[in-house]
Image (cartoon, rainbow, N blue to C red; front, side, top):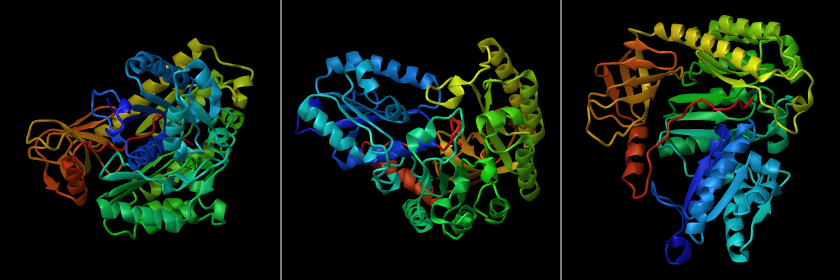
Amino acid sequence: MSATDPAVPRTYRVRTFGCQMNVHDSERLSGLLEESGYLPAADGAVADVVVFNTCAVRENADNRLYGNLGQLYPVKRAHPGMQIAVGGCLAQKDRGEIVRKAPWVDVVFGTHNVGSLPTLLERARIADEAQVEIRESLETFPSTLPTRRESAYAAWVAISVGCNNTCTFCIVPSLRGREQDRRPGDVLAEIEALVAEGAIEVTLLGQNVNSYGVGFGDRGAFAKLLRACGEIDGLERVRFTSPHPRDFTDDVVEAMATTQNVMPHLHMPLQSGSDAVLRAMRRSYRKARYLGIVEKVRAALPEAAISTDVIVGFPGETEEDFAETMDVVRRARFSGAFTFQYSTRPGTPAADMPGQVPPDVVADRYGRLVALVDEIAWDENKRFVGRELELLVTEGDGRKDDRTRRLSGRAPDNRLVHFTPGAPVRPGDVVTVRVTHAAPHHLVADGEPLGVRPTRAGDAWERRNAAPGSTSGVPLGMPRVPVG
């Protein structure tokens, strides 16, 4: 195989755990490896280099990483020359511990030195020993690195990295560092380049997007950036994640409402509806403030879908505190929520707090919360039955002329809709459908689309899939873990 034959290009595979920031970093890692001569490994083939880009937000992140590393150990023994690298937040946190627990790992690198991966792999191969390099501050802003985008039609665009908040349950600030903002001109130039390549949707990305601009002295910079995105020809959809309720200002609501290509969807983490728990979390806003933002967004954008993150069982949470969370869920009527049972993260203040909630109590509250979230989301989705929606096609194999296969798309408010194309449709194209069924987590549009609009994005998807070794676009989705 290529690992032992210098004349054959080495292959790679990147496995990503965690939030959108990790996904975006993985695109950079893939770009760096391809610039260094590596090729993506074919499906089912053993890669010469396997990179794990890790998350450290939840406890099972550790178990998942070490479980995967354990499964790769016999594979590596059977394939001389194979290399394994671990990067991301868990690598930044555990450092040399990873090599101690899994001595067959070749490279460990942190969140601040993503650009070092090709050099570290080569160094490990020549020295025949593990290379661990963890920088304490950002080496190169990730967006300046080469990129292999997962999608031909939609893209992540980082506007900042790091976080200045001190939430007691979160270890991210200590791993990603203080917030660093990109200049607006650099962000807009990247978006314009992406649109020129065929993308019609971008998601502005940061740990706390609406504090953007503090680093260069302009607290209104995020609203201005949204408005500037509205001036980019060919950019049809703009999204952002995740905002912090503390920094959510009226000018952002106005920019969302008046900028045509900013989508009517807001993902705003709640975490808890109890003022006492929010105080213990150091979330620096209260229940009334959160609900006030929801009211303003709904007043300005009546059709907006609002989704959130909620943590159940934070230390000290009482049944009364949990009831406050359930009250916010009922009043906000979220279109969806990522719900989490609190897990202790070493190195966070919450890990040492008294009043750790018994697991059985946490599980019971979690079950009740999920049931309520699903009930409300289903009720909200039922309102769309019989309505027409315009979808950006995001999933499915558009290369086959199969009119009965089920494809998926995202409505402007980010609702997932499954439909039957009735004619060849490519990811990146836009279709208009009539909704026939509703479920808690998706909508269904049976029957042929009312209209199909081929787009430059669909052309870009087709070009990518015509290239040898290429892979189809991956749809944008909501975060798996809270990022703000």
